[in-house]
Amino acid sequence: MMSSFVPGFLLSLSLIVAIGAQNAFVLRQGLRREHVFWVCLTCGVSDALLITAGVAGFGALAHNVPWFETVMRYGGAAFLIVYGWRNALSAWRGGEALITEGRAPTSLGRTLLTLLALTWLNPHVYLDTLVLLGSISAQYDDRLAFGSGAVLASIVFFFALGYGARLLQPVFAKPVSWRVLDALIALTMWVIAATLLMH
Image (cartoon, rainbow, N blue to C red; front, side):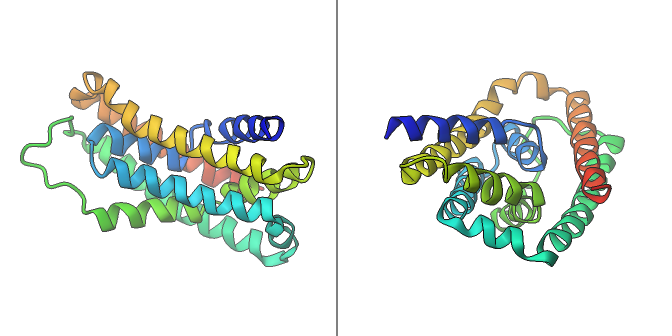
């Protein structure tokens, strides 16, 4: 079991550690301390569903549907461009700091809708979970253990990112830090969108 579980854990961790739209959103929520548990849980559950589908063999089905990749690519790119623009405006305007007094938090529903869009409209998520993890899992005798390891890695990472973000709280007490973060998030979104459009 461990000979399949550990590779699944490590491979999944290596795929999600890269800075992307979803991770940037989780980091931001963790810094704001807004709905952190539900954000981390939503990310973990979404990944678990996709990884399970990939390991179960649906990766090949998704890979063989000709229009799926194109729709996800352009839809995801459009969403990332708009989301990046919102962050760019925040970076330009500035004024945000890690102070919750007097600022109405974003509702849980709106937060989760944004997160679900960032997760499920990202074609890279399908490539990593359905296709890549799904195809690699076929090389292991215990695919259940491989998938379990991959799911656990995802859950551990998102909760560590969400709750670990508060260690950076002193840095983000300064408004300039938020402007830098917003600018980096905007650039990240636009770079990902550009790679999708130029694929």
